[in-house]
Image (cartoon, rainbow, N blue to C red; front, side, top):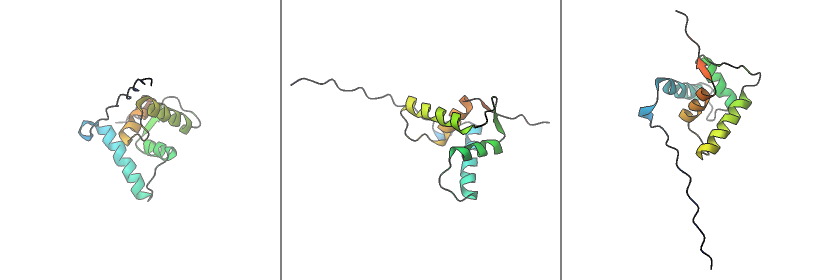
Length: 108
């Protein structure tokens, strides 16, 4: 019998606790919850996530015609890198910000 070396367990990604979220993260999660409540849906697809971001006045510097595909690829890369099958909304928001989405400055 040959001894098999045990496979190393993947390092767990530390997910921020709710008390560590930024104000913007809370606003995003609340906006997602509000969207689900007002549209009476339990699942929000990426197109709807972009609608929520637009409602919060977030835009991306490089405006592509189809913004869903780059977001989908970025989330898939995040899931692969962090071994997350289902990222939570704070992680989705983190990916969005890393993609270059910024909140439009309010005119005074």
